Length: 373
Image (cartoon, rainbow, N blue to C red; front, side, top):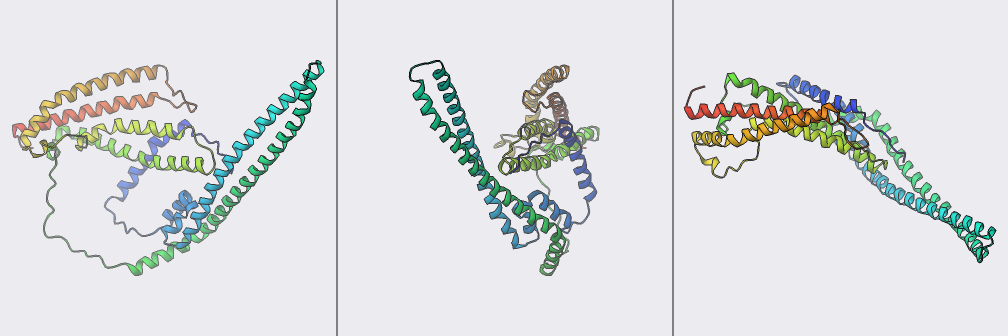
């Protein structure tokens, strides 16, 4: 199989972190309130053909059993790739032995010219050893070529099947849609007469809405929506990494680091959103059974520790960010991605967390005082 030497450019990485969530948020908001029938579609079928066609996902999507043909062929590609790796190691070892044999012969010939005792016997022994090493290299290279040819043929077979399916997909989608239409049952449109019961939250402030602090909730809400769509990027990046590593024997030097940094930024930026949604870890064995005012009082008292932590996080993050920007810090890896934007998100995330904590404290005071909102 051919190797892949692609390394993700830095500008594409940072552009993806910005524009992929924006596009996803736009699509979600555009579809909000619209009826989605959930039927098969050509765009989804072709997306699966492109991303997972090598294992027949597009065929399974249209409920076609011919998708099972792809699986054994792809498994054979993986098994053949294992043999290619082993053959490469054997070729490398054989060439190393050949280099040693050539060195031994050259040294024995030099000793013979210098008239050293026993040099002639060494030359006579080194000659056959060199020929044996050459034969071993020829043999291992032949084995490598054989397995490499098998892998290429299997890959070409999958490629040909995908090309054929690219033309057949619209017809398969229409057949699947028609089949689903025949099997569909009428859906009841009756409206329930009883309203759904109100969800009781662990944190009583989730039911409090203050117009003066609504902007904090909105900022953290938009931020949480934004970074959640980074998970889409992770799916495609790790898909590419697995495909490059196990099919093309070309592991990347950027996939793990890029996703490691992305999830770290997601963790920081979503901290305020998680606090707004009461999603942080809490020991609530007793807290869950307390009345709302006592919960709010307990939260207000323990918020002292929260604000100490949040303030320390802001200060230390600011120091990290300032140091990183001053030297335009990059990573020490071969990819050398910029580190300073990551540290900028540390400051932003800690500030958003502090603001949401302040909003929660005000709501706790409202609950304790019993003021109507």
